[in-house]
Length: 295
Ligand SMILES: Nc1ncnc2c1ncn2[C@@H]1O[C@H](COP(=O)(O)OP(=O)(O)OP(=O)(O)O)[C@@H](O)[C@H]1O
Ligand SMILES: CC(C)(CO)[C@@H](O)C(=O)[O-]
Ligand code: BAL
Image (cartoon, rainbow, N blue to C red; front, side, top):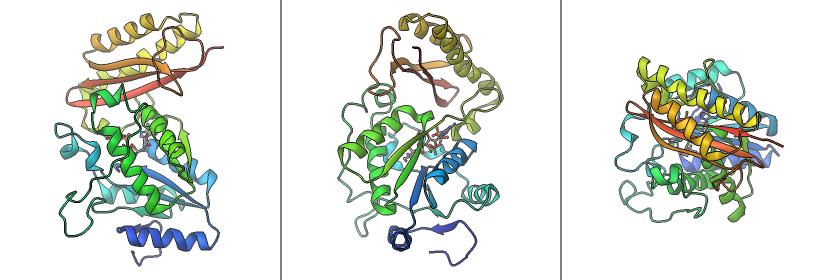
């Protein structure tokens, strides 16, 4: 455990993390957890603000979880700037109590990196489709590492961004199905002024790709507006989003219009749906979504 009294306290081991949490609980403090992979931006900071509304203390985890990346994905180029992150958290105010930054959550001593790890959490229905199709080990890795973080930090509340909509729903389901004593909160998606969904990976976009990537949010806003004007047939809305992204030079991974809770595809909008997109601009895969509620 760091000896500095300046917030945030930086904790590097599971043992110290659990010890801190248990000490705080003995003092009747409630704990909120914001899991991240670092390279923090305003979207992450909004999750911290949300956590602070619910608990006395807030822990931010910064850990690039290798098990959610397949071999051909971007683990090796995932952006990282730990010192910059700590600086941002200090500037953000006095609100973050701990940054949990473990070296390797799969090192159990003596068996090599990930060598001994053989237990995985699967959320078998919700992990299918959308990001689960394009990223075959993604939700298995996410559910497992989040379960590990819950067991180590023992939070009362955990906050996830709706930018990663399917991930949020997967975690909610895992918590319900496995009776974790954690309240999961989905926090609103934060955008840049020009509409681009904030994402750590945005830093890897070339200026041209970044400009073209605005087609994602623009096409989503247009789909929402069309639905609100009565255009409720999903195949039409979907086609229009795909065409706009492709016309801008993006490569669509998927565009799906699904029920907000069960994430099953919808043919005609009746209840709450969410239009989910993943698309490539250059070497960067971006995700975004928009909720549509028509009554
Ligand atoms: N723009 C955003 N608005 C709200 N929450 C966000 C936003 N971006 C990320 N988050 C949330 O922050 C948490 C940590 O995400 P992560 O560290 O992977 O950042 P990221 O920006 O999503 O990175 P990536 O480039 O991998 O998409 C997740 O719960 C994620 O949904
Ligand atoms: C939830 C998470 C921190 C698990 O590694 C990650 O998937 C992310 O940053 O969204
Ligand atoms: N926010 C999602 C983390 C990932 O893309 O691996």
